[in-house]
Amino acid sequence: MTAPRTNVLLLGLLFVVMGLTIAGTFIGATVSAKCGGRTISAESGNLLSPARVVVKPGGAEVELGSRRATVRADRIELPGNETLLIPTRCKRITLRESGEGISVVLDGVLAR
Image (cartoon, rainbow, N blue to C red; front, top):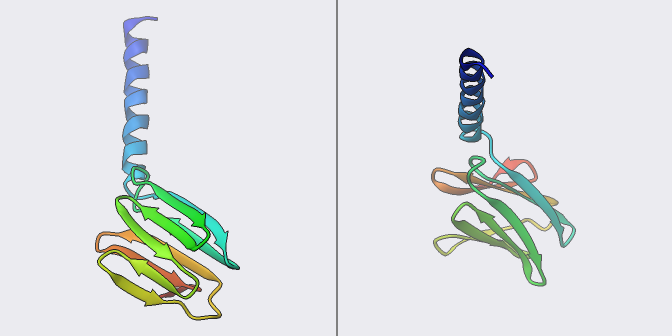
């Protein structure tokens, strides 16, 4: 390849990497699983932060970045020994990584 063409390709590659890096800081990863008749979703704050839902016999463990929460049949155990009760009719639980910690949405309504 000629030098000008190589420079154009390198510049294009640089723009693609920068675009993905910038997009990754605003777009997070989303995962979900079924547990006890409910859908549990986890949304990370950005693509560089992991989101994971692991279903176990006692409920589901949710990992958002370095933060962890446990979803049980009747409650959500959040970091800092905080507990949030789950309404019995709740079918969808979403945990989102935020600057303040983990926010919780129950059936589309922000609960924390």
